[in-house]
Length: 158
Image (cartoon, rainbow, N blue to C red; front, top):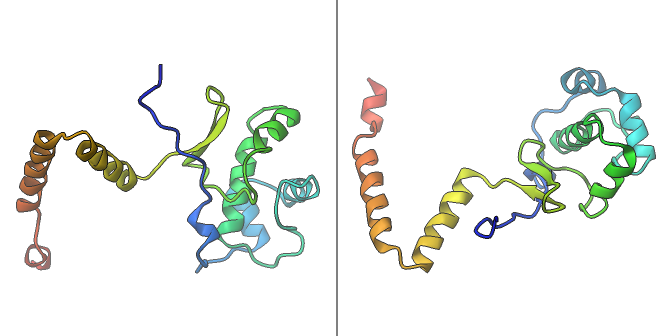
């Protein structure tokens, strides 16, 4: 049924690898996420949250992603036993982009939706692999036409 769709394994958010410029206090985080410190503390005590929210003075993006990701799951209405089951094979910390990572109940695994750049690159490699040269030339012509009509730096200055 879905033979030509490849599953993209869940990937941690880039926030886990890069430092954050803007940090939030707990009050801001609660307001921005609609998740209370009591909920966060419960998740930490249950082993879901990788950090103790009570001990932190400021929260960065990796904390935000983890809280929002878990918040979406816990507020989904799934019973806690189901939550534990679907999270058991997902690597911690749960610092995943909640807009790009989801659980596929069909495939019974976590999936991350790739960026448009990743999809395009993968598609182009696929076309090369299957000798789709005519289609690649058509795409090249379309891209060239778009670039020929794109504004230049001089156009933007005016």
